[in-house]
Image (cartoon, rainbow, N blue to C red; front, side, top):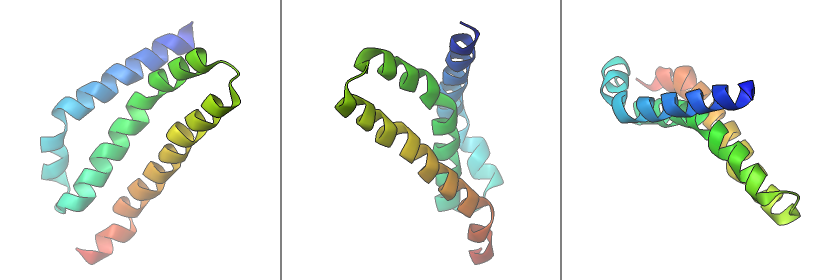
Length: 95
């Protein structure tokens, strides 16, 4: 139950971030491309957990559905992490 509450709060924070944080991110990060990567990655890190767990409840033990969840959520989180790391480190060298 506690995990569900934490995930719901993270989802709400992710929606709030997606709704209101773009001006702040754009102000802090001079490159529009890097700012967009950081903005989308952060929103996805925050907001995906509640959706992810609820998909698991709906899909159950359906192997095709579980595979779709793995790729749809886990792989996109890995991609977002790489993109965020790139934006914070290597991406700074070009600007």
